Image 1 (spheres, one colour):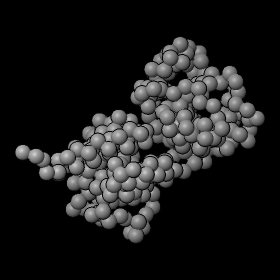
Image 2 (cartoon, one colour; image 1 turned 45 degrees about the vertical axis):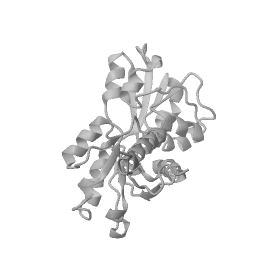
Image 3 (cartoon, one colour; image 1 turned 180 degrees about the horizontal axis):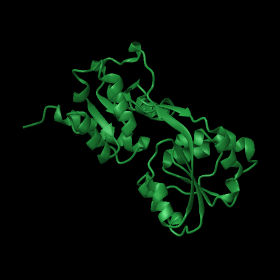
Image 4 (tube, one colour; image 1 turned 135 degrees about the horizontal axis):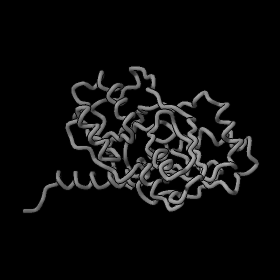
Length: 264
């Protein structure tokens, strides 16, 4: 497969989430450069985590916000629960989170078909009539309160459980990629984009803001412009590997067409 042959791609996702995207990119001939701009670490509130897991059967729904929310609770869940309580339904924000649930041997009952975010979750049929329903949201520190507010407005009883946090990775000068060897940079979060600038600008001052970005929303496009990026970012339909690859395919094909000699 050569759709991305020779295209040099900087992936800024945390290491665990970058693995599958990198493998698929390489399958299609792309050259992958790892440069995680977010580090995911478990929070220290282990007592609260264990307490919530012991009460899982009391919840009508448990919403896993991201793959990291799954990976940072699965071991504790399996150590406490012989099996997932049948009356408690799980909800995944998107395909990546649903895949993480299955990978960890946990059920995946509901997932949006599009809009893999708070809006998509609030549009789920399962979350329409939820007055007095108990819902646990498992997420990272500092995440958006949009979903919780929307569910509370419908009369649901919400508990939030923070199981991980994002932080700026510590890097060495030897970790900095060659600025001339990158064609496109993939950023899938606001924190990751800001950290990209913090980490790379001291070394890439002359070229960073001229690089081609690929992002997953118009909001990220706005953030990139405010930070100083010159080129309009490529915008993937969502954060799935499939959507990101399709965006790369389309851009590469258009780029090759524009630079190929055309018949008169």
